[in-house]
Length: 154
Length: 330
Image (cartoon, rainbow over all chains, first blue to last red; front, side, top):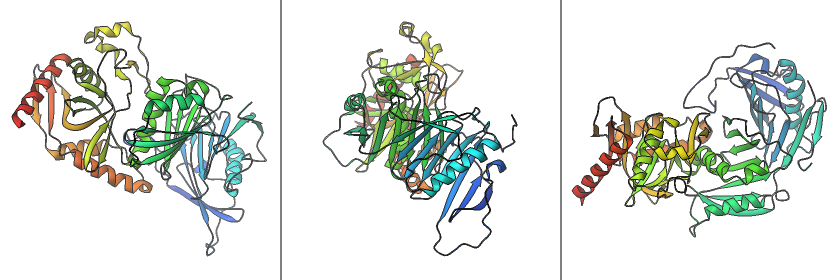
């Protein structure tokens, strides 16, 4: 598996990694809205059309902050979607922790060191696009992903 | 990639039909759940009649189809107002610090496990959310003597827990050995504990031979330790609340003897501000509240305690010192 280089980050007063530097920033057009993506890893910039137009007055934009987490190895695990009012949380083990705040139009998350670019671009990015287009997702599964849904009460 | 199995957990009135409330470190938690086990354990923290505590909402969804790996280590991450806590027993807690809400997906075994509640669910909840509610988590032990709290601070490994156990052996009421939660109520400070277990490292067995009756186990940070109920296992008097009266900063020295040197308020303030978690701009109000409470706390009489003695001898010296100080002020 290809290992990538990210800036090492350690702060004993920031065990949650809230202040991990995310110097890369790009704007995308997702459907009818604009998304500003901020990250610490070039490979986490989505392979989506860039938004090169000036901002349309009144247009709402989304903010995505996605941090590559070099201290969290391992593959994606079974996915849990927590749908909690204005929040949708997607967890696939420690290697994928994502939260969407629909009211604040924010996506924040951590992607583990071993989640490769293909998995990210072909699975996680479509998932995020789908989720951010729906205020309260009825079915938070990307059409392109190869998923088996299991009821919480199986 | 291989198939990804997905599970959807909806947190709403239909899926969480039971309601209750409980008090945690001076805050009121409004709890909704789908589990009678959760209701039963929440009842241990019965609310008082007062209703002016800051409050938060907690939703606990117990999911019988979740896996239940107790081998999983705790994993914490956070960005902006969101904090994730992935816990053993396949537990996942998500904190929304702006809305003061906690969403927890737990396995049935975690939901009914009092140890899980006492060592993980409740301390992590108040540790993460507390600052937004006016609760300042301080990395120090706290014991109560005659209604006055003695807070024992120091760097990790200084021996706070060991000294707390030695003080409790001398009759101080045990409140906490690791994290103490400070609130301000009508300008008075209150120190809270969570009835959490005391944690003693295996090498402290030389000071506390009774530990031979117990078995160390892996604690939240991965180290092996004796974690036990201070009341049931060690017969310590315990309390969950005290008024901060004295602060000591513990320093181990090679030289024999036990010396107490007064500290300035600036030292106290800087010690706790410097060791406080960094908070993002989204939580600027919480940051300001924390600074205000720490400033107030720094006015407590405080001493640097340098000791090369055993925990028991050090505890004895502290007790004599506090008795003399009280007599002098009486």
